[in-house]
Each structure stands twice: as C-alpha cells, then as structure tokens.
Length: 399
Image (cartoon, rainbow, N blue to C red; front, side, top):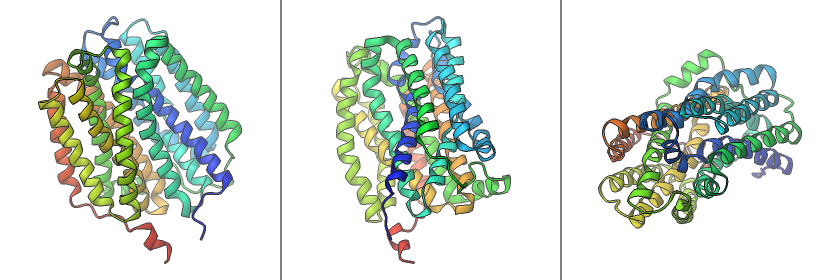
C-alpha cells in the first residue's frame, strides 16, 4: 500500500495548510507586540480590556465554527472558506484604522468571525483518501506550531518597520490572496467524505467519549496558558530583560530554533515507536515546570529565554500530537463532529486565556498568571494519566 500523498493531493493539502496557517497568523502575529502597543491607545490603561481585545478573536471563532462547518456541508466548502476570509479582511481593515481600543476589539472580533477551520479541515478530508488522512491532519497541526513560531519572530520586527496598522493591513492582504488561491488553486471535491458539522446525535456522542473529552480539555488548557502568558511575557522582556519591543524577535528566534531541534526527534519517537503517551505526558510536565520557572526565577533576558525555549518545546510537541491523536480515535462517521468540538474548545481556550490573563494581571499581579498556569498544567497532567494511547497506525495497516 502506498503511504505517500499523490502530487495533486499534496499540493491541495499544502495550500490548505497555508490558509489555515494564515488564519493563525492573524491571531499570532500581533501577539508579541499587542499588549504593549494597546497600552498607549485610548482605553489601554485597563489590562483586562487588553486581554479581551486579544482573546475576542477566539470567542467569535468558537461561536461560529460549527455554523460555518454546517454551511460548508450545505453550500460547498470553497464558497464558505472564501466568505470567511472576506470577513477576516474586513476585520483587518477595521483594526488597522481603529482610533481606540474599543474599535480595535470590534476589528479583532470580525477577524475571528471568519471561522473557517472546520470547513478547511473537512475540505482536506474530502480531498485525501482515508489512509493518508492522519498525515494530512498532522501537516495542518504542525503548520499551527510553525506559524506561532514565525509570528513571534516576525511580529516585533514588522512592528518596528510598519507599525501595528501595517501588520493589520498585511494580514488582510494575505487573507485576500488566500481567498484567490483557494478559489483557483484548490480542486473542488467531487463528494464529501465527512460532514463538517455532523447532526446533533453525533455531536452528543462526541461529547460523551471520555478519551476525546480529555484531549478536548487538553487543547483548551494549552491555548488558555499560551494566551494568558502573552499578556505578560512582552512586558517582562521589556522591564526585566531590558529589551525594547522591536528587538524581542531575537530572543524568540533563538528559543524557537532550539525548541525545533528538540521537538522533531521527540515527535518521531512518539509517532514511529508508539511512545505517544510518555512523550505527551512529559510535554505537559515540562509546561508546568516552565510556568513555575517564570513565576520564581525569571530576572533577566537569559532566564526568560530559557523558559521560553522550554515552553516552545512543550507547546509544539502538544500542538503536533494532539490533533493526530484525536483524528485517530474518532470514529469515521463522527469525525466532523469530533473535530468541530475540538476546534471550538481550542478557540475558547484562546479567548478565555487572553481574557483571564488580562483580569489576573489587572486585579492580582502579572506574575500570578504563571502560578495559575502551573496549577492548570498540573491538573491537566493528572487528567491525562488515565488516557489510553491510540493503536499504532503501523500495526493497524496490516489488518
């Protein structure tokens, strides 16, 4: 049996991974600079409002994910994806010309409203045969980690060059380009392999599966911690690290490169050797250690850089292994519903993390965020101890 994607399948998957990555770029590119930038806008003295402006993208995305998926089942994947990208472009324009934090929050909400991830995931499933689907999904999952890493490096550098308005206009321009690419460069599927929003019975079944619920909780907590951290990491680099905002890319770049060198062997070890669970648990434990490190010992650029490297290792391992684990244990007829629930919880984690991070920084202390994150990571570790790993795909190919 041929395990590789055909050339046309690969081209389609790569283009769709690029669209997915682009949506994430809209979120992550501003992350390293937003909290500092927003402080100087009218209304920016309230950290909770800044957290809301960061996180609201995730809220509108979470609310509209399943409706967009349902629309793609009914009207076709490509028209829905293009319409979603159109909303994103509109939101980028509103955010670029926002006079204050209030308008900026509306722009972010509109950007998030183009919630096309379920439709993109379903289109990938339509265009790839069952045997190659896990590989295609892993490619999309790793595009998220890669986009996050790239954004942290590019965000501060771009901010120094074109400012926040320029960044918003750039993401809008890229989204318009992506819409053209989907319309003209991705084949229209003949048939639908999975429903992006399956009927409510399978949605209910997807919510009752204990294994899937643990993984859903995991993706929620991972993105909660990620967004909450970035309410405070940029200002820590400025105040404790003595590093101006436009130079933050250098710390992120070093941390990301080291983390990729560690992460790739870890994922190969997890996936090929069937050691998914120990690697997964080790990454969650590392996440908890990193948060405690930030809380107790992050006094200069070097220590902050050390903990950031640890964070990226954990984040990228979890971001690449979780979606493939979910799509492996989800029954085929419920895959659309399962991925819908998973993506919704991912978005809700982004929203709640940004919002809660802002509230904690405003009312307790910025450092308290890391204590909360450490407790959440330890709870997640305890929750995941009972997870049954999926069967190794190598074993199941022969059956």
